[in-house]
Image (spheres, helix red, strand yellow):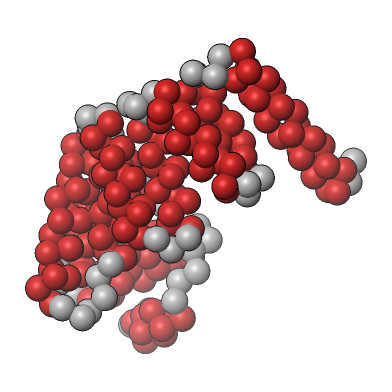
Length: 225
């Protein structure tokens, strides 16, 4: 079977899945989970307008369906509507107490909103992001992306040791998490620990992370030194 044939079969399978979900809704249109599953399938086909409608229907039927708010936030993010993304993830955390993904996503948005125009506002955003990331980790101690993003937030505040600790936690949870290795390479270079910086740089690259050439160039003179 060629790749083209596989692609056609996959599209056919998705279309059949969508048709089945729509059929289920004709029999029970108040099922929030079915609306949500239909939205996920539609997003897979990049049918965003219809998917967005189904997500709102899912929330109307099941107000505590936090995952639906997160997907609506994802649609906003794709449309470069960071504030909208933040609001939907905030609603996710209110819909379900302890919803770690919502807190982490809010933190991600806050860090994206740091623009260098107002130092005080930027500091408040980073501090708020750190607070949300700590909440995410409290609710999910194995949330590897939250640890790595927390490390980034600490680095943005100039707190390199704290950032290193957060990224070490990330690779404790998932040793082959390339983003954390790259972050550690940058951080160890910052404090002059070249051996560790080189080690993490090499691990990040081996795991497929596109390590910046500038970082590799800075580390080059310290190899085999």
